[in-house]
Amino acid sequence: MVNKLFSPLPLWQDSGLAILRIITGLMMMYHGWEIFDSAVMKDYATWDMIKTLPAPLAMVYLGKGLELVTGICFVLGLFTRISAILMAVNMLFICFKIGNGKFYYQDQHPFLFAMIAMVFFFTGPVKWSLDKLWFK
Image (cartoon, rainbow, N blue to C red; front, side, top):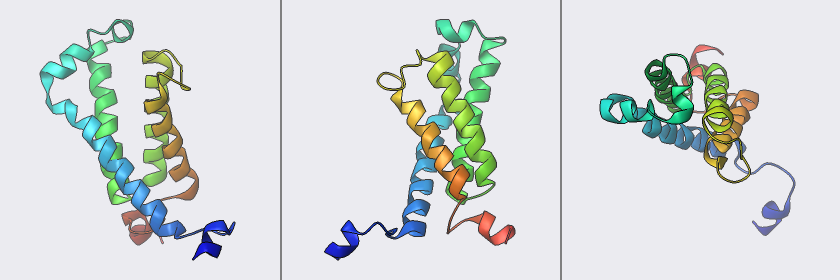
């Protein structure tokens, strides 16, 4: 077992990536679930950076809707690459437009979600996914 830890070969690659995909999806769903709380959504629309956007409340609903839908898609492994791109764009928008673009410190959270999304853009859903069943 120790030899495997020091080996450059992948270790449980498909299962490990699938677990990370599902956990990432659950976390994204958790953030997107705020779409059902109108008070929270209205509060987001009052943020200074969001008020500068066209139709601030609609933009908040669009962002949170993307979080919810891409999270569900990640959990199911459905349309994974499309979901990954949408998740990455949404999170990078949050990091660089809504936040201060300090991805190395303050805005790490959305930036890391974007990076994880890109992992699944490049790898696909791996195992335990509807994509694998439907698009063999």
